Length: 103
Image (cartoon, rainbow, N blue to C red):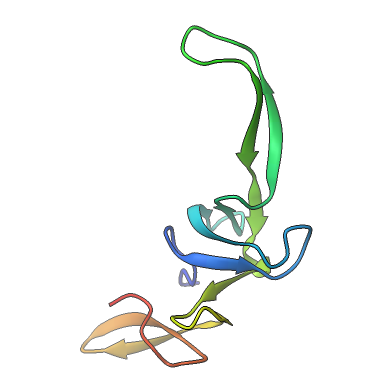
């Protein structure tokens, strides 16, 4: 299946404890069907002090399921992603406005 959401996309959370929050995708794991979004689904990780880093409680964003994310169009509204061919190139477009997401 083609990647509807990619690294760097601005998304909004549709369900869960962080419903309504927005953020940029930091990484995507297509095999697991999950993505890590900046500032969403944050867990506290307790780390031991080392020579390179200070120890303590460090907030870390955890993966969230792709089905709970929707990409934001140019108007700032959540939308679904479609695919079409333009000049022999497959592009993603927003279903609400019809605008191409990445040229």
